[in-house]
Length: 259
Ligand SMILES: NC(=O)c1ccc[n+]([C@@H]2O[C@H](COP(=O)([O-])OP(=O)(O)OC[C@H]3O[C@@H](n4cnc5c(N)ncnc54)[C@H](OP(=O)(O)O)[C@@H]3O)[C@@H](O)[C@H]2O)c1
Image (cartoon, rainbow, N blue to C red):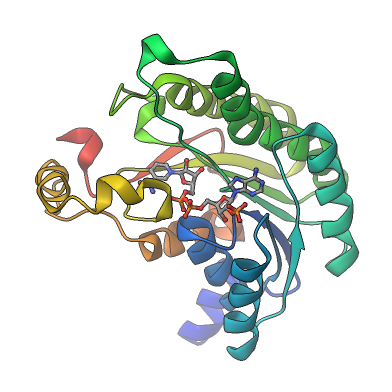
C-alpha cells in the first residue's frame, strides 16, 4: 500500500457531504476549505451574501465542490429553513460543523435579556436544532460526524464571558449528550476549543497589539491562533480516523489552556 493510499483510507472525505455554519469567515471558513480540499462536498451557511460568494468562488477555483446558503441562524424558523435549503445542494450531510457564533460582550451587570437570547439562539440553539435535524439520519445511515466550535470560555471566565461563556459551556454538554445518543450508531460528536484567534469576531481586541502580545505570551507556542490551525483537527474529526473519539473537547489553542 502506498503512503498516499494509506492516508486516503484514514482521512479522505471523498463522497462525504458536509454542512459548515459560519463557513464564510474565520475558523469556519478555514474548516470548510479543509473539508472540501479533503474531498467533501461542502455547503456553507451564513447571512452575508458577499462573504459566502467569495468563499465559494475561492474554493471552486481550487477544484472543490461547494455550495452556499444565505440564512439567519438566530431564529428557529431560520435554522429550519437553512437546513432544508442546505440538503438541496448535495443531499443529507454526513458531517455537520457548527462554527457560526457571536460574542457580544456587555459587562455582566449590563447583560440584558435580548443579548442573552441572541447569544443562546446562534451559539447553542442553532447547533441543537441542526443536530436534531441531521443526527438521527446520520445514525440511521451508520456514519456521522458532528463538530462544534466552542471556546476556552466554556472552561474559564475571560474578557466579559457573560452569556457567551455560558452558551459555549452548554454546547460542550450538548456534544456529550449527542455523543451518548448517537455514538453507538457510528456518529461521533466532539468540540474543537480555540484559544485566541484573530478573526472578525474579535476585531476590536485583535487590533490592539499590546493585548495581542499579552495573549500570545499566555500560550506555550508563543503566538495566537490562526484560522488555518483548525484545518488538520477538523479533517481528523470528520474522517474515519477519529472513529473512536467521541464526546471530547479537543483544545486547538497553542497550549493556552495548560499554561
Ligand atoms: N476567534 C476566536 O478567538 C474564537 C475563540 C473561541 C471560539 N471561537 C468560536 O469559533 C467560531 C467561529 O468564530 P470566528 O472567530 O471564526 O468568527 P467570525 O469570523 O466572526 O465568523 C462567524 C461566522 O458566523 C456567521 N454567523 C454569525 N451570526 C450568524 C447568524 N445569525 N446566522 C448565520 N450565520 C451567522 C458569520 O457570517 P454572517 O455574519 O455573514 O452571518 C460568520 O460566517 C464561533 O463559534 C466562535 O464563538 C472563536
